[in-house]
Amino acid sequence: MTEAEDALGELEALNRMAWEAVAARADRITGRRVPMPEMVGCERRDAESRFSENLPVLDHLDAALALTAQGPLAAIGERFAGVMHRLRWSQNPNYTEANSSRSFLDGYAYAGFSGPDAPLVCLVPRGGLVLLGPGVEYPGHRHEPREVYLVLTPGSEWRLDDGDWFDVDAGDLIFHDRWQVHAMRARQQPLLAFAGWIEAGDRRAIGWARDGEALPRG
Ligand SMILES: [Fe+2]
Image 1 (spheres, rainbow, N blue to C red):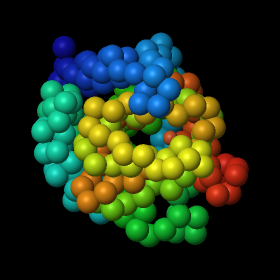
Image 2: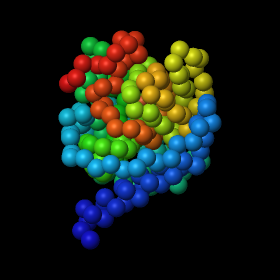
Image 3: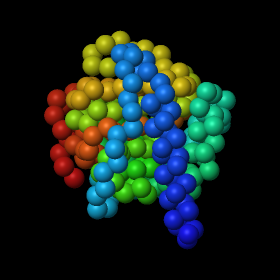
């Protein structure tokens, strides 16, 4: 087996481990359980991500991993830390200063594990890590695929539809239904979470809740 195949095998095992942790939990709000979706192959498509190694929020990655190591998902966090150098951090290419804010763009990043633009190339499930810097809010947004967030760090808040903000802790599972508006924010510490889409979808079709429709395709 080549080194590249070894590395992919490691990512595949870790991706499965993350989804097993998802399946082992019930959603904080509805109590529902979400098994790992069947993997569906596809051709690589990189256009859905704006890749960058210089995203300012990455200054908080080590602190987020250290927080993860103190929580209930420490074992997974340690494995994530071990493959971090194989992941590419990115942003949604349709998130710009014109439709979001500089503080958000400096405070958020996503690294895919699986998906059309991730090391494990597939249509379904899209899964990876979301990182928010301290005090950063990911404003209300929505998308067609149903989604789960497995939260790795303590001290964040979530908001679904037009409900109240609620506290979210390390180890919590949060489910977002089809087109459900969701927002999250990190309090004084960074937020790191594994996020997965249950159905196929294009990142560029995510829409800001305030617009009520999808962002323009990039
Ligand atoms: Fe989402």
